[in-house]
Length: 297
Image (cartoon, rainbow, N blue to C red; front, top):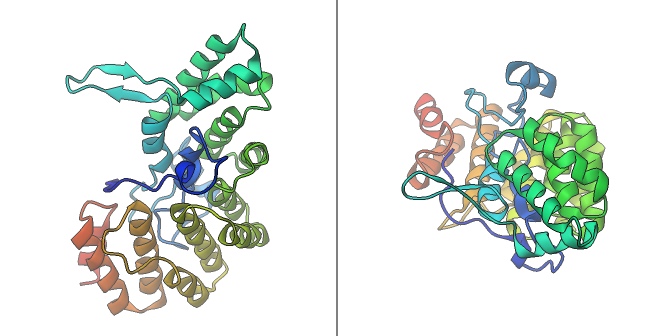
C-alpha cells in the first residue's frame, strides 16, 4: 500500500512518555486503512489468510501496513542499502536503555540483540517468528514497555485479540500513554466488545494524543458503529475528523477511504465518488482506490 508523506510521531508531539518505538502501534489496527464496516468476521479473515489478520477492503486487497513500515524506521527492522544488501538497524537508544535497566548489566546486550531480532522479524511481517523471539524476553522483562508492546503487536497480527489486549494494556500502564488505544479498540471490535470500543474512543479523544493517533481511533470507532448498523452515526463521526486537508498524510488517506466506503454503502454515491476522486488525485496508488473510483464512475 502506498504510504506517501511522513507520519506524525506521537513520540515527539506532546506525550513525554511516548518514546522509543512505542509509536509502532499508532497505525497498527487492522481496520485503519479499510472501509469502516466493510469487513467480514475476524474468524473468516483468519481462515482466508492465516496468520496475518490485517484488514482488507471489500475489493480483497490487504491494506494495513502501518506498523510494518513504522517498524522499519523506528526499531531494529531491516534496512536495505542502495545496493540491495541488508543492514541491521540498532534499537533506538531509549529502548536499548530501557532493556538494559530491566534486565541488568550482565544481560543487557543479549536482551537488546534479541529484541532487535524480534523487531526485524516483525518489520519483515514474520509475526510468528517475531513472537517466538520476544516471548522469552517478555517473561524476563515484564516491566519493559517496549517488550510488552512488541509482544502485543505480534499477538494482534496473529489474530489473538484477547492476549493482544492484555499485553498492549500492560504497555500503556507502563508508559502512561494512550497511543495503543486504536489497536486495543480494534481488538475489542473484533471480539464484538463495542462498549469497550466506545470507552477507548472517549478516552482517546479527551487525551492529549497526537492527531494521527486520534484519527486512527476515530476510524476504528466509526467502524464499530457501522458494525452495529449505525451508518449515519459512523459517517458523522468521520466527518468530524480532518477531512479537509491540503497536504494529506497517511492517516488522512485512510480516513477519506473509510468515509468514501461508508457513503457508498449508505447509498450516497456522489459523495463517495468525490472522496474516491480526492484520493486518486492525492495518492492514486493507495489501496484499491482507482478501481473503487472507476466502479462507481
